Image (cartoon, rainbow, N blue to C red; front, side, top):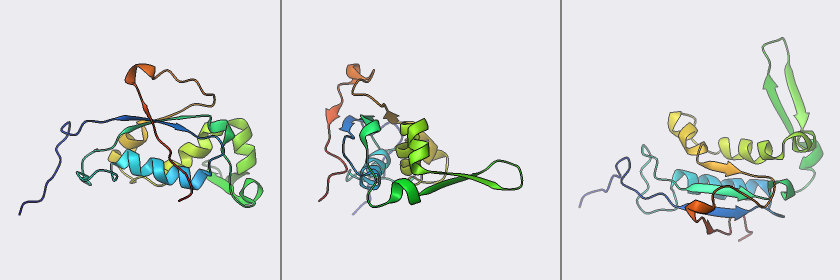
Length: 145
């Protein structure tokens, strides 16, 4: 019995369209990360990018569960002698795409392959997107199972 190992460019990458209206950020990010890595396929290979493209629309209508809008803190180091931080609601007001993008990024591998996978994620605030030519298939990701 031989183990199948996918090679670069061997797996056809599909395009998925996800409507993020009234979806919980963590559940949605988890499902998107699985699609970007290619773990939903039986031909998943850890060292090869076997994932698909994901287009997310209406990201300005996502929700957090519980009290995370006020209690969740995003922190970063500026180079000066302290860390900066802001709440999820503040970051969402400034740039709603950053909330979902950051959640997905933290669920992907922390290497060059993870960066390549994250580049296949396209996030838009409205319901319009410029990827109609790729014919993305609708996917119901982030639904409570």
